Length: 278
Image (cartoon, rainbow, N blue to C red):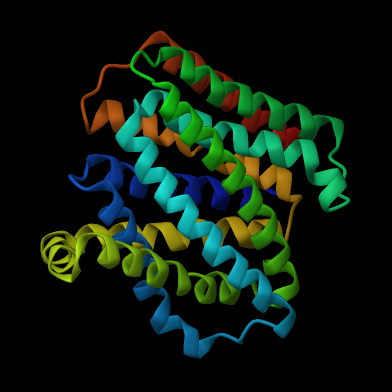
C-alpha cells in the first residue's frame, strides 16, 4: 500500500468522522442522516456529465448498494438514539473490517500478507478498545451497532467489487450516491409527512450539504483506494475515522477523554504504521 493511498484514505476517514459528528450533534438524527445522504447526491450531480457512465455490469451493484446504504443510514440514526457514541461508533466501525478481513479470502480470493493482516487486526483492536469506556450502552444499542457492522461489511464488498468492474471508481461512487436519498426521504415523508420534512430541510439544509459533500468524498476516496490495494486493508485503515472523531469530540465538543481513548489512539497509530511497513 503506497503512501499516497494511505494519506488519501486517512483524509477520507477525517471527512467520515466529520459528517458523523454532524448527525450526532443534530436534533433529529434520522432526518439529518437523510439530509446528508441527499447532500452527497447534490454534490455529485455537477460532476456526472464529465465522467464516463459505469459499465452495465456494475449497475446491479449500484442498485444493491442503494438498498444497503438505506439500511446503513437508518441503523446509524437508530444506534445514535439508543446508546452512547463511545460504545456505538467503535462497535459499528470496528467490527466491520474484522468481518471483511475474516472473509475476504473466501469472497474475493484476496490474500493478505502477514504484516497487512497484523496491521488490520491491530487497528480493529484499537477501535474496539474504545468500547470499554462506554458507561451508558444498552443491549438495544449494541444490537443495532452489530447489525450495522454487518451492513457495512456487506456494502464494502458490494461497492469494492462494483467500483472495480465499473471502469471508473469515481463515476461509480457518484452514480451510486443518487439512489439512497430517494429511498431515505421517501421513507421519511411516509412516516413524518411532507410538511415536517420540509421544515427540517429549511432549517438544516446546510448540515446536509456540508455533511453530504464530506460523505461522498470520503467514500469515493475509499473506493478508489480499493482499486489500488486489498479491500480488507483499505476497510481497516478507513476505520481510523474513529480516531478523528475522538479528536473532534475532545477539541471542538469539549468532551472528557478517558484513558481508554488515549490507549486506543496509540493502538490505532501502531496499526497504521504496520500497514505502511507491510
